[in-house]
Image (cartoon, rainbow, N blue to C red; front, side, top):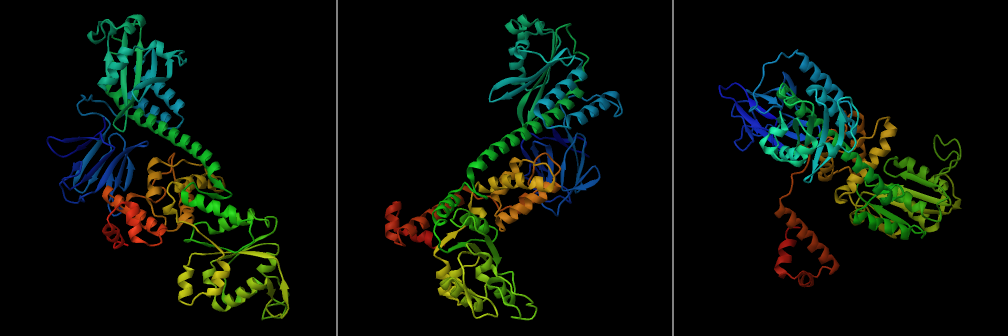
Length: 587
């Protein structure tokens, strides 16, 4: 088991890293309490994940010296020296209860171990990693045959088995002793048996007798404090074969192998999840729009109904929620699908140019008008015109737009001759147009002309698991464009993505995914790659807070269904009317 040792004291303190997250700081409540100057109350954490033991500071303002270099995040290696304020610590993969043997750091055994470590960290393919681990143990122990045993949900399996000459073994379970494996799993300790037949614990065990076992070596593999499996090495030639094996060296290797195997299994699971999500994406796609949430499914059904009708549609929602994609999907499913789909951003063009952009102009209509030019309405003839950010349109143009929508005729700038055109108008805005109408910033008659049907797109933070679907969709789409390999999302990254509020919605998520794909170095995208460290996330709600929030939302939904009738709402919910009033005071 890995430990953290506090240096400098005559009787050093050892802290086993048995929990998934270990906290370090000066506050007494920390797992590792460092009562020295220069240490913050909650300074750092050590987290065990698929990549190993990862040290992270709790704030960007804090740091830890690792082997003399300032770090905010670092994957720990055996023997790393840490300095936090005046406190000095050492990270070790060895249990301090095991006796240490003096060994030169330049000895052939450690050089061999370094070479093996380099080979093992070169792939995330589970089968290849397990084969490399087994080959390495057979090299280090000089055993006759070896097996990697994985333990899952109380059952064990043998994914890899081979002899010393690297030949795979058929029917591997027939070469193993159930009794020895059960003992090793129960003890969770390294096991060297010099002569199995003389060992009291296995006296009379049928598997030992049938297999004629002599010497056995078992090394446990741990991940997240749980038993991941065993490395089992046997030799049937002579007894006492492993008596001279360097157990300390093999334990260091087993600790290292545990992290590598756990990492490979974790990456394999992430890739499996990613493949499953690909299948889900196909079933949850609505054209170019992705969504499985109830809110988006309601939008999709509304699009199917409104698309065939030649009526104006107003699409509302925060910036980056995909309003243009929904507009394009309405066009694609409409009878005008073979015609053009023309877009114009009414808030991005200066007022003196917007009229010409929309309606076109005659030659000489203004300075620089050297030729007759069509506008967006002309371009959208027999198709669809999408007016994005309609709420930003100047008041003078709102009058002219209203006339065009009423008459379906367009008059160019500099002309008095109207031209009849065939078009459908879809509009979108992030502005609250009802408030804009009330404050006289938007014409009421134009609002009703545009708002025959309104579709309100929910923000990403209210779409639940859609954010993970979208993230995986963006990874698959953007990786080839950026010339990089697609990487799955780490489990912690998925959790962080779901917790973050995404004020910029899908557009912000897309930018974060792009950055992560370009700069990430690990096998999976982490919260750090996505700039979603714990400090950037909203605090987790307590169960009581979550219940209160749900109760308020449910009451407001029921109140809306009852047309604001509080007494009826209280009867429907079987609560005292005063309860309804108490919740409404919180709004």
